[in-house]
Image (cartoon, rainbow, N blue to C red; front, top):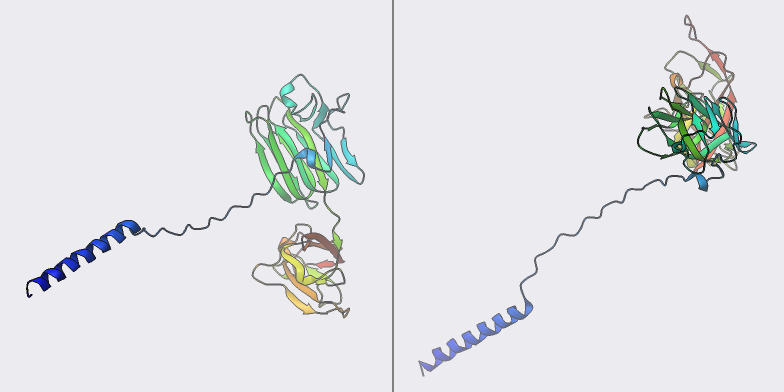
Amino acid sequence: MSLQKPLFLFLVSLFSLAMIGAKTAQAGPTPTPTATPTATAVPTVTPTAIPQDLDFFTNFEDVIPNTVPGEIIVVGVSPTTANLGGDAFGGRIGNKSLYHSGRRAWMVLPNGTGVITFETDADTVAFYARASSGDTIVRAFNGSDVIVDGPVTIIPGSGWQLVSFSGRIARIEVTNLSDSFPNGIDDFGFTPAPEPIGVEIDISPFRVINRVQLGSRQRVLVVILGSETIDVTRVAVESLAFGPDGAPSFPGIKPVLLGDRNRDGFTDLLVRFDMDETGIAAGDMQACLTGEIDGAPFEGCDTIETFAPPGRQP
């Protein structure tokens, strides 16, 4: 009996090991943990405007006969027109490579600048451009002659390039750096900017007269007055631009909610600007503030009186 019991226990152990091995084989190897994939942000791409999709469009096929340099080509309907002029002409010449579509285009003379002015600021402008020889430089300006988009450089040999600008655009300049050949602008379209919401502002609010000091690093205080249509808490501070040069809100100092300064029942907003960045000059009698509220443009102006520091000329 003493030999049979150990033998029995030995056989039971072998059977148990066999069963464990069978279960392991059925289950397969222990899976190796895999890393959880990290989410990758998809960059937001601003869609490029297509000229034909904008409110007003021309392919210059109706420019018959050719215009002469300096003659204005009008696109659109007043008061929302684009006026193409400067050192440029519209029509047809013997070089068909200067036509993006059809058989006509608007062409800027060698070493010349074509100018597109908008009767009402444009919100979006798009057209095709091609340089024959020498670069073509395209820039968009606002009403204060500040570049709001561009410059875009069109290089010879690159074929037709789609130029698309956005912002409150008052003028576009197309400069042809070639010494010998015109460039081509074709399939031109634009959409007028919406009319800005009118807001009331108060410059130098803590003075009886809105006096601003020239030639100094002083800060100009401007109050945006709230109303039934203007909730100043919704103003996009980064969009604010004050004076002819469009000075931004003074960096590092947040606008201050003043409460109801003019006692009309609506909250007002105090903003500071660097005087030297405003572009306000001696003799200016008005200054304006532009910006956006909930994505919609607004504008407000107030009278001012300029003066120079004692002992200094403005």
